Image (cartoon, rainbow, N blue to C red; front, side, top):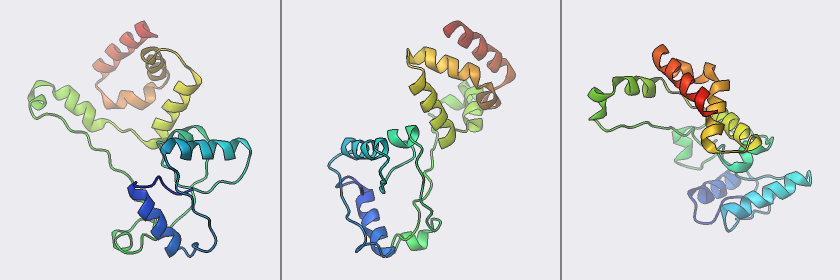
Length: 171
């Protein structure tokens, strides 16, 4: 299962299949939609059938299922610009604020500078919310109450006390 037709990963996957010498070994399917790709993966997973395909870390199946990422040579710009025979580069998440916020909310700026949100953290939050359905505010409050070690380093001790008090009222 490759990539949805028209997505940029379609061309990348095609180039990788050629570069890795798999063109004669694989029957490549480009699904018509993200939903079709997810359905194909869930069906194969439920039947315990092998599935080889393109999936990204924040995609619903990657967050719910125990998938194995195949090893590829690490990303390099030089190779990526030619035959794509490398892993995808890690995505960079940037936090931007309006310049007027800098003098008005230095505590918010400090929090954003300390903020770290990894794929493992995102996956944990997603799985916890999936297993504990309810209102989003309550789910988030309970998650934050149970994971102080993750977010308290982002903010001042005074702010952490205020957040914990507010969360206790929400959950």
